[in-house]
Image (cartoon, rainbow, N blue to C red; front, top):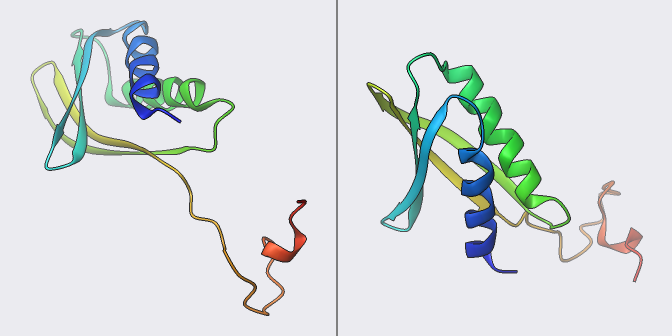
Length: 107
C-alpha cells in the first residue's frame, strides 16, 4: 500500500470542496501537517467535516484509519495534524475471550 497515492487522492478530493481554496501537506519531524486555505465564509465545522469525508473516500477499500487534530489558524489558513495509519491487530490469544480474538479469524 502506497501512502503517497492515498495522500494525493485525499488532497485532490479535499481541494474540490466548496469553501476550500487550496490544500497542501508538509511533513515536519516526521509528522504530517495539513494546511487548508479557506474562503472568508467557511467555518471550522465545515472544514473538519470535509476532511473526514475526503479521507473516508480516499481510504475506501483499504485497511486504514485517519486521525485529524486541529493545531492553529491564521486569517484564512487552518493547520491540522492529519495522519493515515494501519490499526494494530492482535497477534496472539490472551485467554480473555475477546470479541476480536485471533482464534476467530478466517484463514
